[in-house]
Length: 424
Image (cartoon, rainbow, N blue to C red; front, side, top):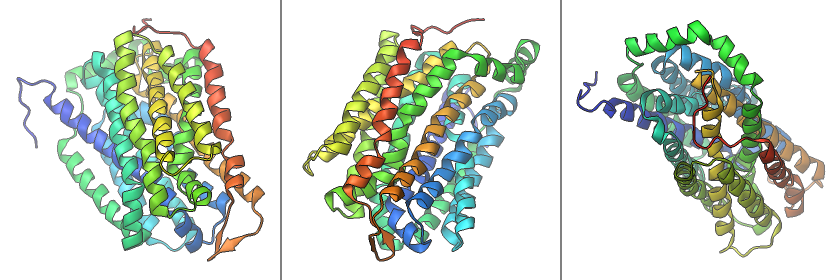
C-alpha cells in the first residue's frame, strides 16, 4: 500500500496517470503488432489479405463496441477495478494469441486484447478529468498520445527485430508477461476517488443527470457526433498505415525487408508523438480548437497523398510519414472540444462515445483495404503468401485521402468552443 504525501495532493493522481499512460502505450504496441507479423500470420494460418484484415480489426471491433459501456463503468465505479481488469484481459489475450495454432482461438485472443485495451484511453482521460486540474487537460492528452506513439514505435522496427530473432509466438509471450507485470503494479498503485468526492459526484449525477440520461444527451448532441465523426476519419491513417498495412505496402513498393519497412513506419508514430503535445499546447494557448483541427486534417491529407502516390527516394519516405504523423497528432484536440461541449457531467461516457466512433473508422478501414487487395490480386504467391503489387496497394489505400476529405468537409459544421466549458 502506497502512502500519500498530504502536502502534495496531486502526487498520487500523477502516479496513477503515469500508470494509465504506461498501459496506453502497452496496448498501442499490441494494436499495431500485426503490421510486422503480417507475412508470418498469413503463412502460419494460410490467410489472405481479407482474413488478415479481419484478424487485425477484431481488436477494433471489441474496442469500439465497449467505449460507451467503458465510460459508464468509470463514471459509476471509479478507476481501480476496471483498469485492473482491463490490463489482465490484455495480458491473457496476448497469451492466447501466441499460444494457439487454431485461427478461431487467435481471433478470441485478439478480441480479448481489444476488450482490455478499450479501457486504456478512457481510463487515462477519466483520471485526468477527475483527479487533475482542468487547465492542463489538453496538454495531458498530448503527452498521453506521445507515450502511446512510443508504444506504437516499439511495435514496428524493435518488434520486427524480436520477431526475426525469437519468432512471433515467443515475442508475444514476452509481452504477455510484461502485461502481467503492469497488472501487478496497477493492483498496488491504483485508487478510486475519495468516498466523499465520489459520493458527491454520483449524487449530483443521480439527481439531475443519471448515467442513462447523460448517455442519451451525448448521443443527441449534434456537435459531439460531428466531432466524433471527424475523429473517426482522422484516425483511419493511423489504424491502416500504422497498425497493419504500412509495412506490407512499403515492402511491396520499395522492395524492403519487414525490419526496414517497420523502421520507416516508426516515423509515423514519432511524428504523432511530437505533434500531439505541440498542437495541444498551441490549442490551449490560442483558446481555439477548430483552426488546429483544420491544420491537422489538411496537413494529414497532403502527407497521405504524398506517401501513397508519390515515387519517393528511400531517404524521403521517413520524412513523409513523420509529417503525416505530426499533422495527425492535432486531431486529438477534438476530445477537448467534446469535453467543452458536453453538459451531462458524464465525462467518462462522453470520452467513451468519442473514442468509439474513432475506433469504428479503424475497424472498418483495415478489412476494407484487405478486400480491395484481394479484389486486385492476380494469383501470384511466394512461400504460401499472397503477393500484392504496388498498384494494388495504391488503389486499396485510396480510402485514406477520401476519409481526410470527409473530415475537412465536417469542420464548417463544428462550433468553436474558445476553450470554455459549456454549462447547463
